[in-house]
Length: 316
Ligand SMILES: Cc1cc2nc3c(=O)[nH]c(=O)nc-3n(C[C@H](O)[C@H](O)[C@H](O)COP(=O)(O)OP(=O)(O)OC[C@H]3O[C@@H](n4cnc5c(N)ncnc54)[C@H](O)[C@@H]3O)c2cc1C
Image (cartoon, rainbow, N blue to C red; front, side, top):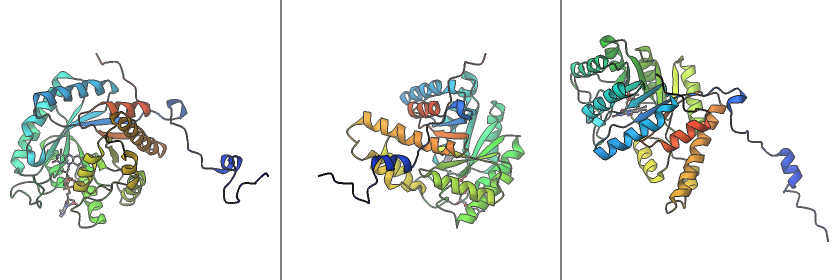
């Protein structure tokens, strides 16, 4: 006997006619200019890591990022290596480097000297940060130092007319007194002379978009560039996120569940997760992205490709 489907379950046709539609991938022809990209690298600790970093730089360079930044180890521990990496980028590539610099453990005079050396080496862009205490203790400003990033931004502007980027936290900096104080701090950094903020990474698109709303409401009009961390190693992301106050959504864990022993599948899942994140941001009008590459190019390259960015011929 013929049975009609239960009332609670729509038929295939009903589902087809009334179900949610998910938009297709953005394409260059559909009114999307390729976004502006920047890439973050870490200074290498060993020769092997140096080789890996330079393979990464050479792989990503043809995508013509507007700048590439090089991090500064906790407590300034990589000062020489950051400087060497940034200087080599200046002399051996046509990329525009940005050197990260932190306030921790240095006097204002020392920071200003480092900045002056960067300027003399042809570096015009600094990512100005407070930094953290190595080992994770409570932050105490150096007695003769810049206490917070906003103070360093003002100091750097006195050294030379640097382009300055600062950090922003869509999920609030863990040490902030409250969300409003953190937002006011971001505004202070921009008012002191920074031209853009780069966000800590996040996984919920809505978290970032709501943060943009709050920034606009606070009178911030500078670019708040989303920092994208393409996750390939979920356990590592869990560790980072616990330290930096980033929420790790349940769905993300679920995505990587059962892929520990299957690196090929894990890479495919990672690519889909990261592509979906940038695609959603792009669909919401975001046209600049900063990638935490962790000195590994493949996933960043693939996502850039999906966003419509293609290799450009080398500048002569
Ligand atoms: C894009 C990006 C890149 C980074 N790169 C590096 C790196 O290369 N090396 C590194 O060591 N770390 C790096 N970090 C981490 C960063 O150093 C830490 O998150 C650090 O804890 C805060 O740095 P900040 O520049 O945001 O600090 P700040 O903007 O100074 O803020 C730090 C905290 O102090 C609060 N605050 C600010 N001013 C005051 C005040 N006057 N009184 C009381 N509280 C105040 C703020 O609300 C916030 O909670 C990076 C972070 C991001 C997002």
